[in-house]
Length: 80
Image (cartoon, rainbow, N blue to C red; front, top):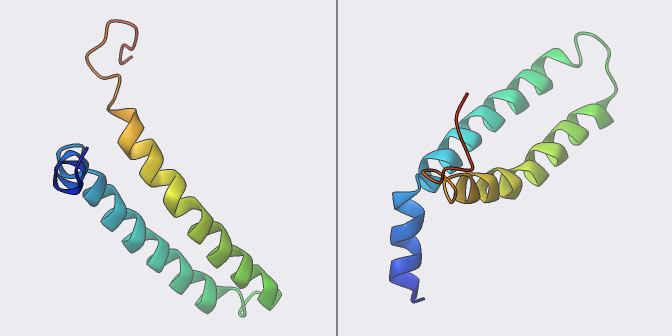
């Protein structure tokens, strides 16, 4: 598989859209955490934990976005 067809496949599966949506929501959650946590006297390490969890979740979301559409259309996977 060459690089051009790989990126075309990612575009076809809307992985780019998932990446952008995840980045926007993660940015929003980080902004909320940095503004609200000090108000409720939540320790500073909690903000770091939120950022770390969001960073670790990014590749997971991309893998799920890429693999979730692999089985669409097969009779074994039905939407309910």
